[in-house]
Amino acid sequence: MADLQVVDLLVAMCRAALQSSRKTIVFEPYPSVVDPCNPQTLAFNPKRKSYDRLQKALDNVLLIRRMSQGPYSEIKKQMDMIDPLAHPLLQWILASNRSHIVKLPLDRQLKFMHTPHQFLLISSPPSKEARFQTARELYGSTFAFHGSHIENWYSILRKGLINASYTKLQLHGAAYGKGIYLSPISSISFGYSGMNAHFRTHVSLKLTLPLCAEMGKGRHQMDTKEELIKKYNQMNRINQEPLGQARFLQNRNLNCIALCEVITSKDLQKHGNIWVCPIPDHVCTRFLFVYENGQVGDVHIDTEEDKIHRDILQCFQFQFFTD
Image 1 (cartoon, helix red, strand yellow):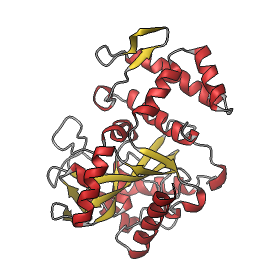
Image 2 (cartoon, rainbow, N blue to C red; image 1 turned 180 degrees about the horizontal axis):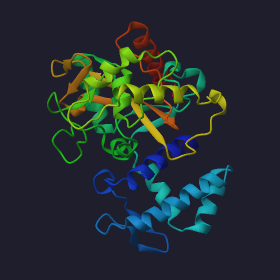
Image 3 (spheres, rainbow, N blue to C red; image 1 turned 45 degrees about the horizontal axis):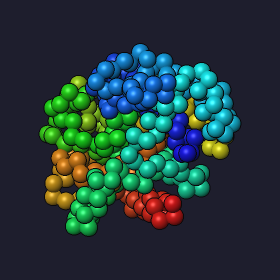
């Protein structure tokens, strides 16, 4: 059984996709779950989608997770009593995730991301990981951030990051052409994760505004300076929980930012702090950072700075070789 915090993360992403106004697009793949009361039929069938029944089963999964802090066997027992489809759905959510996710222990986390909810993806979907490793041997790699609404991660963890430019999946403009958009600067990707522009006390609005605006082409709308200052002041009033005592994913106001490894071949297009990779197999998600209640990490992180790059590489390699 996976770490319960990893379970909570996967369930939260499933919930976000299912409750999205774009669920017919982002809630893919649709579950295929055998009916425990009639093993000859599918209770959840991709050919006969029932979002309402799926939502009911997922609500019951969430209900039991909030009520029970006991062992997994007890959680399963309670799920079976309340809804016979709840546990089979949970099993499917876990089994269909093709990325091996582990929760980073506090002493191995990247402190500059300012969240206790840090996860390492040991491997992407297997076939993609194999192609990525081959490309890395040829061209080398580096790290960059990718911001996407949490509702999109249900599909990303099962299919990997894809080139959504000029498809029904695209939400923002593609000012620099087709490809997966990344940035070495954290503030740029934070904006595309759906976060409000909250800032910590050391953030300079003068420096941050141009960074956020740089990717603000297409349909992305920037906050005014006055709105940013208001949100900045609100962020200063948020009480920060000690890292070791944070409750995991207790609310629906969640955001996620990814730190990806990207192949540094000639195909990677760099337009200042905006990078575009037209080859999906050349981008693999390595870390996920989850934030609650509108909180946000340090918006001045630059993965091209030597110290930041070393910290990322050390964290990734240590976990990879000791898992």
